Length: 218
Image 1: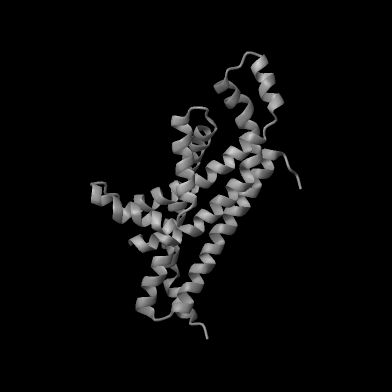
Image 2: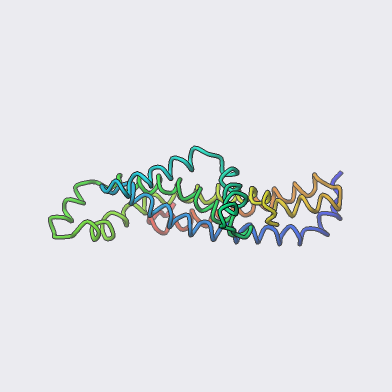
């Protein structure tokens, strides 16, 4: 039987952890989009000094676990005199990780823009950078919104890993409450439900944004 009194009593603590999870997700999302856009443009560049480092970054991030990346930043970088707080270590790891996936999504969206439109822009006297800003990116954005939204939903769930570096978000809050209540099922159940609320709400808002951006009415 579920102990509802424990759930009701400790729910505010879990909600506080969920709010920190949301904060981490939002900051990581913004940074991850910026990193992904820069990496995508570098990969598409003809300059090998930009292209190959960006390709290496995307490859190494996608080929290694997020947890290892998180440990490298939080535990490894202090060995070289670079010391981030748990919050910024978590944000940096999540942003770099999702940025690599965003880079591939953005790159695919840019390449999906018909070459004829790029050639038409060039014939009107637009330079490469102006063509990218006014012709290519606006069309690419319309195509990449759904996969970028999926990346954000995954990002919210991945924030649970920052509990391993003492950041008291939703997962670590539940773990600490279990230590005092000895009610693991209730605590993890509430944590799971709060994650579900966060991801479902994010998915709903992203779908509404997608419909407005793409002009979809159904």
